[in-house]
Image 1 (cartoon, one colour):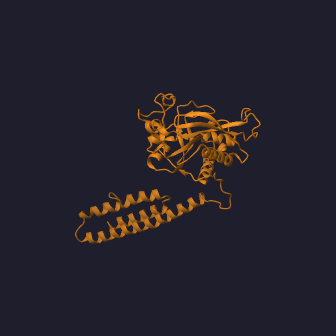
Image 2: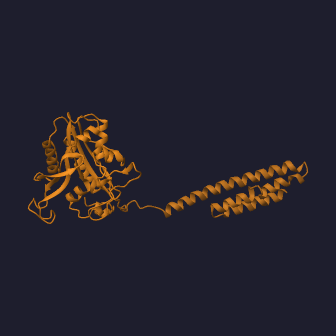
Image 3: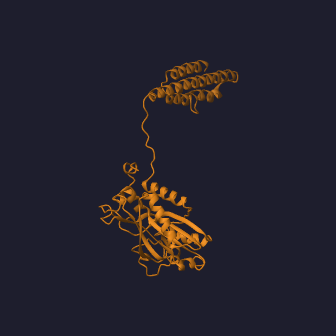
Length: 339
């Protein structure tokens, strides 16, 4: 038995030293030291030995087991170091080589125009207000004095979720929520995304951006509205810009108007960009209708105000001479990097 154990030790040493990979070492550990390994079987067969032989053989077997374990650990550690060195050598990086170029993020042109518009209005004392994109019919239409048969309420124009919920068609509901939650004076702008059931073409998209404004206080006049929008146009399009107000109809304002700016391409002389008129329409506006004020709990005899709204996508297209709204939503980095 003693000779057999010595022979087993010699065999194990030769195989362990000759092993070329960690997987082979693990297989050898199982072969010699596992539950059914060679050394384990010897220890199990000790029951067949005499009482005098058992202590001696047991001692030798344990010593051999320890020697094999120690050798396995040593060789395994060496193999691990060698494999790491080989891997580092194969995956070495030449730090003197130029690095790969990284693409930096860039502001979208709509955000560039929005930031500029916000800065202009903040400079005039406005605050920013926000509201939910999923709105109630009440906030989107009823509170804004829109008649029940108004075309914008139809399924062909508006995305309804339920009979009482819809995707807001304008950011005007933010004005309603502000008037209901705050007491005058109020001076806010309400930027955000809006949704209408439009076919996609060069000038229309079912998702678009708006920025609206609201001022409520005592003794507000149409002159305040005209002065505010004239200042905005000059700051956005240039100091030489002129504004023109035309009568219009909106259910939530009275009187109402649309605002044109002189063409910044031709200076108002007439060109292809302004279709020869010398003017470009940019927004709608008017004095807040008394019905809207009363609905929001504001005394229309004591307070009045004005409101305005513009399509931010249209302003962006005009400012940067973009002729197709679809490119604003295609996320082509080659287009976005131009701004």
